[in-house]
Length: 419
Image (tube, rainbow, N blue to C red; front, side, top):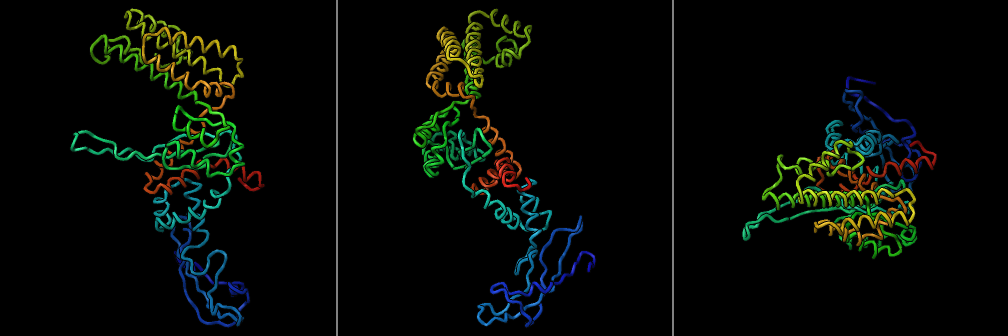
């Protein structure tokens, strides 16, 4: 019966079965009262008062002398009902609420909610990894870098800069496969070596940014896989090169940083905008403004042309381009880079030449690093939801659970379960 916020409940006869031997008992030993926590009744807190009976086991061969009643909704000795524990795990795992807010809402401790979440996600995350054809590798900074002041030199030095390396299914629905601490070649090759050999043999391509450490780790751990350099990072490198040229030219000719009176400073954003996104009259004004500044503007325009040549080359990705077309655009890029007097442009051309096999693989296959970057965004989002993580194990667990939703839904549909 209901008494305000109190509910008194009893047990049926099925609860008198011994948990060890299964024999039903008729020998009553005593009565106990427990008050397990339960989910609220609407906006009103609910307190359960459970009047239980303690029974003697009638089987003399049973090692258990006595036992209290239990039902599927509440195990013996449990301080929480099963539906409350399910609600706590669902709030964090499905509704993506932070642990502290969930604990305050249900009136339980932080550790109670966290343990319920761990019990909910441990089995799915421990399942064998799905078959992966294209593996993506990228790093995510854990927290913020910590700087300390060196008294001897009077400078600030980097004390802690912690990173996680993530492995993702870059062309399927596997999501985030794992996260490990560090971002060195040994970290990558070590994780790959720990995986089953048949799983590693199924990987044909690996997408990475322009990281020499990741490239070495892939060559050591997956010698037969083809490296694919991400196009976004190449365009970003070209934009950084153009910015470096512009800043250096202004400093050399003006003896200071750029200001509004400098045409190169006024068009700095248009220089980084894709040519096809500029209106013809806007492009004409930018071009003429730099031409009118003389040699300084010509050097900046030379870097701009090289940047657009690289973008035109990378735009062939996913279009099944002919090798002749690729060679023609690559030659145009190298010719304009060689004609430039900017050392920054020459370094960009050297980087493209060094990474050309991986760039060519990206043009021919169309594979990119977008999945890895997307999961990095989800990882940062989970960190903000949790107001930061102190424990890296908890951080990796929460992030991987958030980054495998698509895989779990696909597995549920395949098994005929509700998604």
